[in-house]
Image (cartoon, rainbow, N blue to C red; front, top):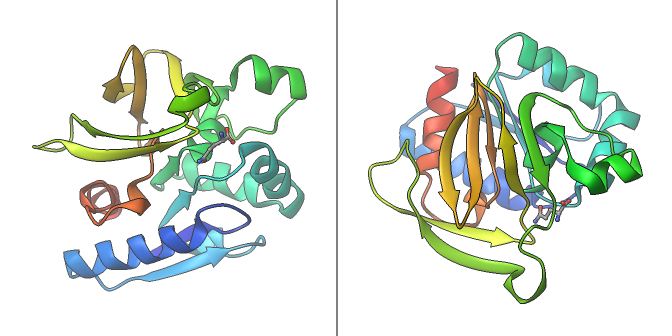
Amino acid sequence: MKIAIVAIQGNVEEHISAAKKALKEMGLPGEVLPVRHSGTIPTCDAIILPGGESTTLGRLMAREGIDVEIKEAAAAGKPIMGTCAGLVLLAKDGGDQARRTGQHLLGLMDISVDRNAFGGQRESFEVPLKVSILDSPYNAIFIRAPVITGVKPGIEVLASFDKYIVAAKQGNVIALAFHPELTEDFRIHRYFFELVK
Ligand code: GLN
């Protein structure tokens, strides 16, 4: 199994390490490849879009031609997981901020998002979260997190916090507002890699 981690900017090392540990836990042989340029994604079985700065990530993915490759992979049914800024990039509607700035989005999920939704002193926090695909709470770490403010039919809501949706799935595409790479609990990664098998 070959896993691509978009490695242009953001939480890249943490994602590489988490993906490797999760594969090991599952006893799956696999390669985890950091991707900075076009050419690699078409050879991979699944793609992870890390957190970071979604405006920068979107712009640089487009410049490198990685955006097109990710869209093709999604169309081919390959599993894709976006976390935090990655969630923003997966959305069809990036909210007012994205519209105002003409932000590059992949638009792979029928969701509307609001960037930096928790703002101010609640910028970063940790909370035990009920996630529908897991049998016990997951300690979710939110860092200047976006939220999902609207979903269209076809979206499966995986988790909510406060009045917001913070995790969702559409086909083989998963969006998380929090950071699964920052804990040692790899259940979400494992669920994601199961989609590849
Ligand atoms: N606030 C960032 C953005 O919208 C995301 C933050 C993160 O990925 N930790 O781009």
